[in-house]
Length: 276
Length: 162
Image (cartoon, rainbow over all chains, first blue to last red; front, side):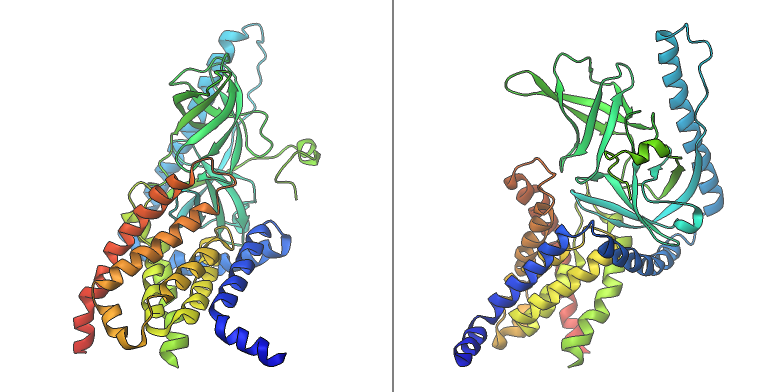
């Protein structure tokens, strides 16, 4: 019996090994959100990111880092303020009677630099050189001077993994800034799509899309993109909106983590997907 | 012994760093060459199918950990790429397979398998057709990778003269 097994193994060892390794890979994919696996990943990318940051530093040795970073930070802060003012203007027109409208938002930004990028049409993510030591936490939004870039999914002491809008796993609650129509934005491998919006809802090409107040993981009113296309399905009842993002993921180097103070009450709700 | 077990791992780390830091600079519309696949194909053609399968798995594991990506996705696709490349292994034609234009075509096939499966693993969330994944996200990066693998052919006379 043992001989038969031995002969079988020797004859088909390549197939047995490849099957075994593929099964291990598949089971690891399904275990990605497991706490133990997350710990290993955080530890590993934290270590490797240190090496990346050194090589990335060599690449940028001629750049005037401080000045550029300062200006980009200022630009990003202004972008957030301009967008907020735009929103206030629209709301003001609608709700003139609310004279005591509260100024609620003044986000603190933590500047960071992208040290490595995973170039893929479906798995877009970055490693950035800010981490827990910079008061950065999992779930914090990442912006640049143009708008939303993504969110932090793992944070080690000095580095963090950012899941970008170009990652098919990321789903965000967004809203049309003009008409306040809400929807879920996701990456379909080619474009950002807001799926299954009733066709009779007021959405026009060129409308600005921002993060929604209903989002439990992002602060409201961060610019995401503009509607570039409307695709109505065969029945004509539902529409998919194609969104052109403001940010260019391929060209960016510097980002900012927005120190978003999450609501404790929202955090306690079962629906918060990033709840620990 | 050294070439079989340690050299690929030693070469892997600088190549992976280049892949994550410099290759994004030469990417076009999120289409980038995969240097790790070139290294994987080269060593598989020298050592055989079983070796290539295990090496693909190891490279994938390290790459997933280094990139902060979905753990298991590169492991799966690179294991498969190593396994497929193994079919081209021929003990008596090692030099021919690794120093002539043949390697470019083998890299094209291995890279097509690698990048297609890497993208397909995100399919539960992605709502586009499998054909589109294979053509846009498999074939285009594979072509780019195979063009870069020409450097292996171009460098081979230099290596022989050393």
